[in-house]
Image (cartoon, rainbow, N blue to C red; front, side, top):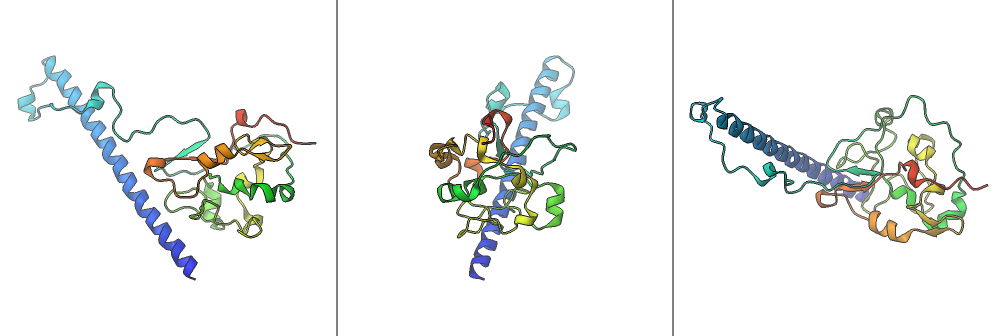
Length: 230
């Protein structure tokens, strides 16, 4: 029970941080809107189309972002696959899924090496998965699958590294294969992990405002070049 209460407390904290970050994001957007309105007034006054005094507005002290510079806190461009925070993310699966054979991976043989590192990747749940309520989502980053403070999926059994909701696991988990994921394996055949990428992107802890991009389990085609092992 103590662990459950501690996790609940952590989720409430994350939910509060998410709310704060969204409010900060909205405040930033409002500031950007003020910049646009101020510049618009300047242009209209300059062309004699409006009287600033009659309008009761004097556009001055326009922030630097009006000159094309990014506002403080603007996120840099990141390569895919990533999920930004704060944001609400819901996965939309295609009506007709890709017709391809899933790559076979002998997880039992690899588990002593990887320790289920794929369970440290994140992804959004679909609307159907959210409604079924079998899989927990992160209150601090709706509706990503929930990870505990150690950076691993909350549904991962820390002793066996197996999935505790295996029969009801999300579609992403059912279709994911690390066989072609170069982020996980630098040498798939010889079971050599890509430790550099893992240590940089899958460190334990929560993704907050200064670390606002998390690695997604959904792997783009360009990262999955290796065919399934025979």
